[in-house]
Length: 122
Image (cartoon, rainbow, N blue to C red; front, side, top):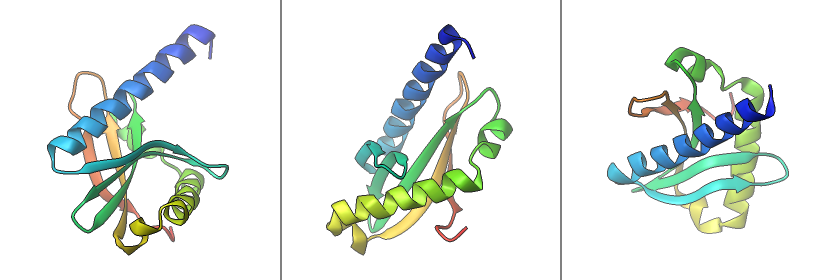
């Protein structure tokens, strides 16, 4: 991938994450963290609503099927490990029910929120 294309993809990814964070806020979630990075992985968005802590992976692609299929098993495991690090760093989050979500973004469409897309033991 050339530098210009990579830069556009990075900008679209950041835009998609911001769009999803606002989408969640409008639906009553409180965004706890964005771009949480550890040595074992990264979490795009961590949001809380009531007693649920949603760990959200954002995928932006040209079509929803490609976006949904791009969250592989290896990536899910990395996100689960990063979530363990997050809860260790913020012990107050441990009492909440954990849920792994995916938000799919394609150009000129609202994000699609897939709640409970996978479990930590998948």
